[in-house]
Image (cartoon, rainbow, N blue to C red; front, side, top):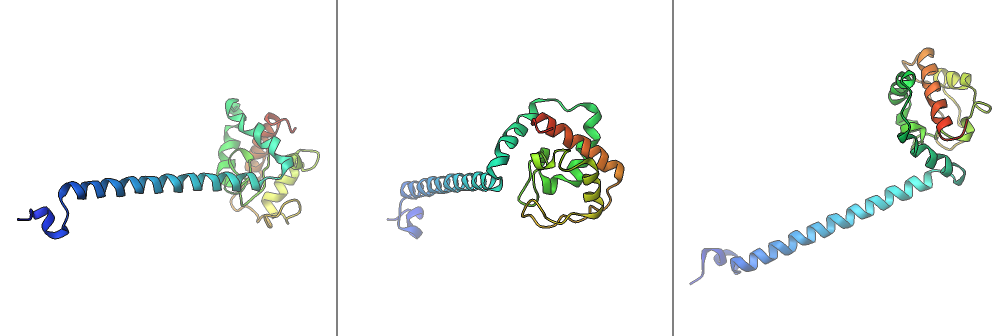
Length: 162
């Protein structure tokens, strides 16, 4: 006589357990494979995003996290996070939507503090990068941009750019 467990499946409970364990193991292997794939894609896209000339700057910026932010720059950091980081990335490293601000191109001798004011107020036509034009930033004040610029200049100094 068949047990209730084998009646519907034709397999014993121990066989069904082995099948379940094997499919669970396969699911974990699939998840691990997907995770490795996604990590490699993220690393590739991040590496491909920056030109060879920016890699040294970006590596130096990543070390900034070890240097405490001076308290007088906290407001600039907060405003940068609100108004700028969506395109220009955390600590000015850039994203797929905007260039890194911690880069030699944005040093004061090439882009003055006034250039940051104008960019925020009027937007900027693309001229160094292929991210498209930057629109004016709504809701930002001149004082906000001054604080943000001080924060960016500090990041640049930490990276050895300024």
